[in-house]
Length: 273
Image (cartoon, rainbow, N blue to C red; front, side):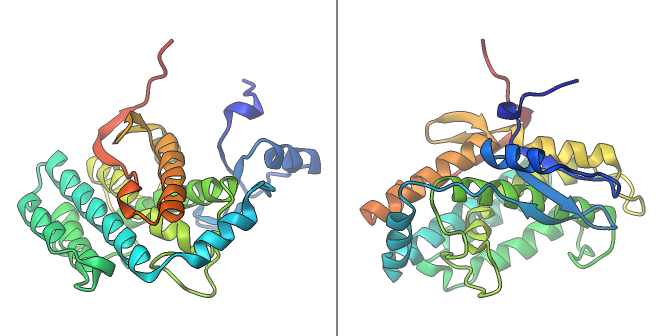
């Protein structure tokens, strides 16, 4: 089967003997395709991003650097609220307890998340979704699946940021000097519950390894429907709209212009017509 380059957004290289020619890499750059390398455990450990010479890159850099602290803090608070809201929806979709508490967490988020509701909600969310003994450091299928899904999602967001002229190393809340994707790590937060919901709905044996079929399904989550202010669309399209809305936030100094996804299940997006 042959697939046109223009129909591809993500490529995951999951075999140690794959060899690529320069024309293939050049074509991936030309068509805006992100390509992931994987390590010996078959987890994504590197990403090739297109070098897109955006016509407004300098303007975008100036806007990112000029963003006021109050605007950045309010924007981060909006991201945290939507993340926690989606975590609560994931609990509801899996018939897990705790949805009411997640609503309470949302109401306690302040500008800049000074009350650390994000971390408190995350600990509560994982304990209700995967069990009170669950730890993110455990070497189990659940964590392998979460890590794989998050890595793919992060790369897709980084791709979108670069395509729109952002400098992804300049984040809102994340500010690690050694992290080239701080801004991607900000915007990923409301999208993470899509991965959480899938993993919680499909895990069976935490002693089992992550299989190729699991990885294919996790990549396919980029095509799951979410609800955006402009309607229902795939995660990949929602990422684009969130990034475009962030431009308006910075340009107009108004965090209320930020558009973020709401979790509505795991239905694959269907293109009509």
